[in-house]
Image 1 (cartoon, rainbow, N blue to C red):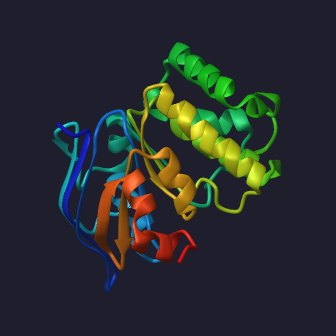
Image 2: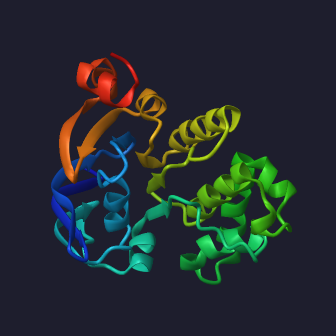
Length: 238
């Protein structure tokens, strides 16, 4: 049984028909990527999964349970965390306070919160160095680390990453993708939305190509990297 199975997912933003009946699945232990042009529906798909969009139809099964229509906090409690595009950190809270916000489903379990924070700091030592610094004073790369770290505080089975390399320089992009590999190695399944299609496909097991709200291609990442249509449209080749 797939960890995440989506069938016929259809969403609307007001009158805009954003997703038009997409099907996809993510097996436990995979990294799966969604690629496509701006406006293709990639971020919309993640928002629908995490409960940030309520106006949708179709089936969203997580570990066999229907989650479509659940409130976002209930989705997190089931084991899905979302690191959104644009980071969305709390600028006036410290790094530690931002991380605590990601652990709110743990309630007053201080031992679990401290252990999760220790894991995040092991992954991002720079955040530990800046643990008492306000989020708004961090660099762009540090804010992205904080965004991902906050999502990991809930100890998810499935991590949704939306454009984690956006706006970062080459060295930080490499660091972020190396970190995604490390998160996966720690047992977290990853669904990745990323404009850098080549980098995403190189670390993913499988991929889906979205165009105007529809899945137009899917398959193993190695096959998509070799596909002439993908090369021409998304890899800058041909």
